[in-house]
Amino acid sequence: MPLAVDLTDLIAYTDWQRGKWHAFLRQHEDVLQSTAGPNGDGRFTTIGDLVKHIFSAEKRYVDRLSNRPLTDPASIPNANVEALFAFGRQSRQSLREFVDAFPATEWDVAQEHTILNHKVRLTPRKIVVHVVLHEIRHWAQIATLLRLNGTATEFQDFLGSPVFGDPRA
Image 1: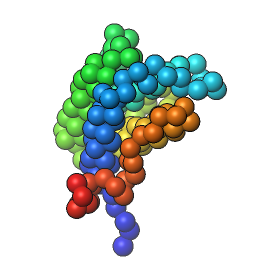
Image 2: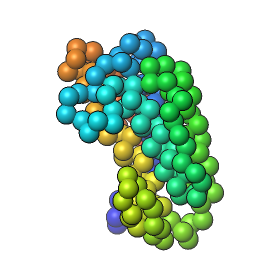
Image 3: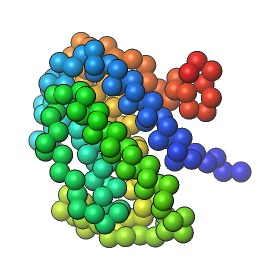
Image 4: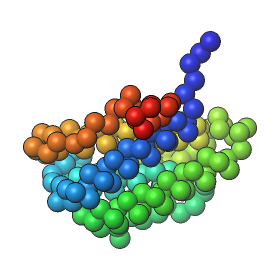
């Protein structure tokens, strides 16, 4: 029998991660202005840029899938924890509403999208899974950057999360 992980489990994990990061960044708001490293692609220079990118990517992919104009996150300040996470709550609400309302018969129907000036055909399922994995990957990147710069972060492995009934939750 194949192993199946429900998308809502991964969303629950990233909800938990967001809570951890929100609490951590409230205590260490100054790290939002820390460097995102010297070898990036030029889009993100600070940790705050990366946090905003996590939330704006989620929002913009839902915009694409919903045939809406793409949200412009330029007005969201990169160095303000509460503004960033308020935007994150909006992006997550949009994702939840999309997932809850999207017809089951359409999840695997490829659609054409323009992403970073490239035309691609992707299914909504692939895009939504990408959104969640993209977030998980960037939180790990942020944790690594902070550790390399001398700031310890909390344990955030999936095994330590409350997803699937961790009794420590």
